[in-house]
Image 1 (cartoon, rainbow, N blue to C red):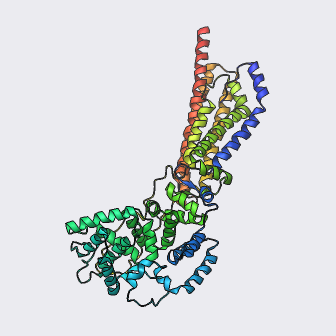
Image 2: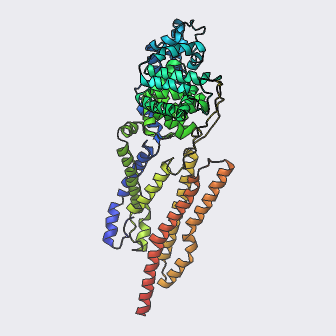
Length: 558
């Protein structure tokens, strides 16, 4: 804050500067508003950023239409479900186009499209009796389909395909019945399906390398080992996806871990499968999508839905950043474009604006409110500048404005992968219901923090007025010193109010009147500590020191 005014010249200069405090006040408040509304955060993504990222990019229904245009109704069907789930405005129009396509191409629908690679599977097979999508494993598990595949793959010249076929003779299994024993049809079908996916180049290159290594190890050791986990994951996906859906997903999957994560997600969150699958295809990275869902669980699925509602660019931004979404109702739309292009610079400007805004605001309060009090105390206030106070308050603002900074990350309800024994059954396991909510700083929390801060500002002013009142009295320095000591309880009252505010907030949270948020409760204590520190260190202690010196000087003179 400003220096005390010790001379008429200073008073005159201050008087001439007095209109300046209004400008400081306006600029300071303006910068604080800009800082608060700037849609950029350290550990989260603002909704405004997602909306900006998705602007002028393909919508879910548009992406589904593109899939239908290249004769892939299987993935398009999941895109249609996702479009309806996220409330895409074009969902119903896309649904009409999809229904028309399905009526005209009934023979393609069970497989999710047509693929020249399907020819060996369909040898000697009648046309499908249903036009509905069929899980690929439902076709592959039949004896006729397995015999057709085995004859076709037996003459393959790819060494990896031959190695995969040999794993069907491995007897060392844990979850499956060995393929060459009664009841081993599920494992036999999965082995043939995996080899067929490799033969027809439907596995990504990185996934091929990992699968080949595990297959060679299994053949050499006589134990399926980790390859059995992969086969179990393919079994899980093959019971839920048709041929084109499965092959398109595996093309965007870069590792065995991602296949396992997707299989796990289809078991524990089948209701989110259309959203998860469509996000993987839109971003061309099943790995990033699966990692995001495994990390953030149910809230992550809700964030993914929100991003999908904004468009392809929003989903890409979300899974690339791997950050939770902060659903802030207030933001600058024009600031979102800048923050999206220059996130680091926008973050710097946000807190720089707050720091400068607080500095100007404190200078305005000094000049417009406390000037007469400080001039009365005549030099009682040593320098704890406006800059230092602005830094402290900026740090507090940083803590309160970052919704995920101090909040411990909740344990993801999708994180733990359970091993489900599979003997011979191909029934679909029941989904595990899970729900986790992540609370954000809402309006009641902001109002609570604002109220606690206002109380401490009032207490700070009261303390300054009391010090000024003692200073104006025509009393000896020693008597003024005793009066100051008598007001110690008043000077400590900020702490009492802070503790009372914390207790009140906790009680209101228990009663359910405000949302449970420890930041709202403990902010009262924090503001109380800051208030008392400012009063005692910046005002009381130096004024007492002045009185002690004056008292000693009067004694020596006497």
